[in-house]
Image 1 (cartoon, helix red, strand yellow):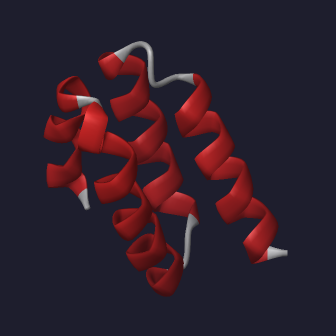
Image 2 (cartoon, rainbow, N blue to C red):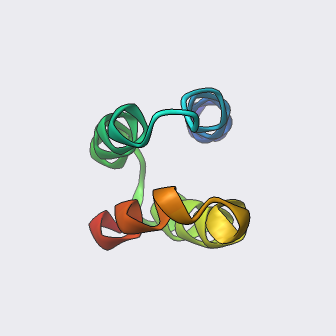
Image 3 (cartoon, helix red, strand yellow):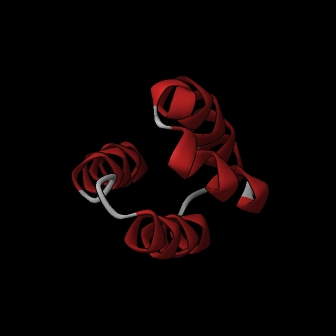
Length: 63
C-alpha cells in the first residue's frame, strides 16, 4: 500500500513541476504522508529530478 502512495507522490510532483509554488505545496503534503524510508527515496529521486530544473531546487530544503 505505501509503495502506491510513494509512486503517486512522484507522479503528482512530476505533473506540477511547471509551477514551483505548487510543487512546494505538494511536496510538503507528501512529506506528511510518507514513511521515513520513503522520504529518503523521495529525496534521492528529487536530487535527480531537479538536476535540470533549478527553479525547483529550493524545495529540497524541506527534505
